[in-house]
Image (cartoon, rainbow, N blue to C red; front, side, top):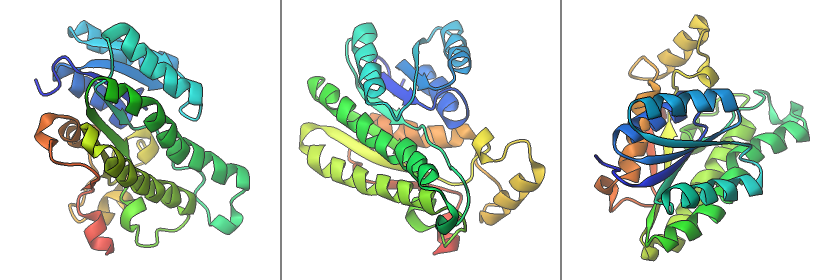
Length: 252
């Protein structure tokens, strides 16, 4: 039980990687605080966990909201006595178009959901981890933020995910001596609704970009997040952990 008795926040938990992580972390003994915008879907994930004997509470909301980041931490303290870690997974791709054609509103939305939310999460979560004597944070970035090979139409997304890697490395440096580890997870193409699920042509195209010639399943990415949150990764901090089926190698 890699996370037995630990309380973990997961955002973007209503589907895809976040939902897979919720199920996996619960099976590994974690108490979960699940966040996402879609209340009904979020409750469905939590209900399934409870039916299998796990512990999960939900709080729907918007990760762009400072009060929401604080409320997730407060709920962890209220229901489970504190916070031991978080998988800050919520994000959007946004409008896929050249930056010169993107409206400031669309740009700002991608940056807010992907990068500003990471800042807000860290700002709320790190003091809570400090109160527990340490812990671990994982932020979902992307191979696109590390080496995207000039993929077209992804300027805002690439900027937000690259910025997240920089933020994670700064946080890791600032808080390592406090026993707080901070890492970024960089998935490749994953079979989720945001990844083109239901469109065979899109999925085949994206799959063939990867040297392994397939996309990841959500649970494969969730397993990497589990590693970064558990004690097996006790000497890992500030890492952009690439889980992309070789995509970044192909693009270098």
